[in-house]
Amino acid sequence: MFQRILVPLDGSRLSTQAVPFAVEIAKRFSAEVVLVRVLAPSSVTTVLQSNGKKTNGTDDIIAQEVPFKDVDNVANAKRYLVNWSQSIKSQGVKSSYQVTVGTPAKSIMDLADSQGISLIVMMSHGRGWFKRAIMGSVADAILRGSKVPVLVVRPKTAEGK
Image (cartoon, rainbow, N blue to C red; front, side, top):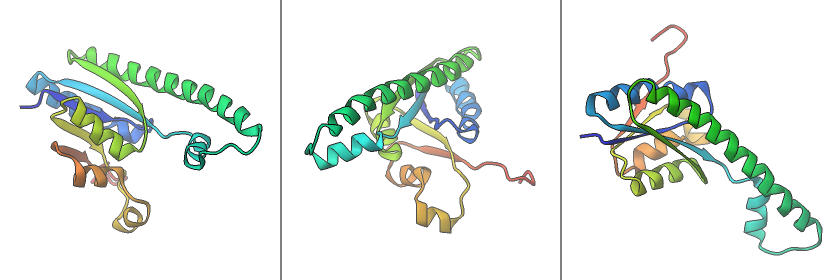
């Protein structure tokens, strides 16, 4: 039923709480756990892309500095995912990982479509409806837009509920 399970990790402790759920499902279905980290494009890159014109020499300097920062961010994200992937493999579950740059919800759904993902397992940040309405929610956007099943795990509250 489930062959490839996608687990988005944003670097927070909360997001990693989805991993044991994905691993348990993967064990039951002999599935692969695919970890993904979506990095936001740097604001300078976004500005240059949206503006499209160079006004003076400072744009050249900024554009040259951005790729180094992006490369460093990608390298850090890969190390983070490698560690989690190794942990999953040590439990006898096949695991792979991918780092992508873009808008989190769209990037996760695009990856799910292109990689033959059969289930997305992710944490909810536990925001109330008001904060979610104002700030948006990656989990909410994926729930509404995903073509594959989504398991959203709610974090435990301080009272353990």
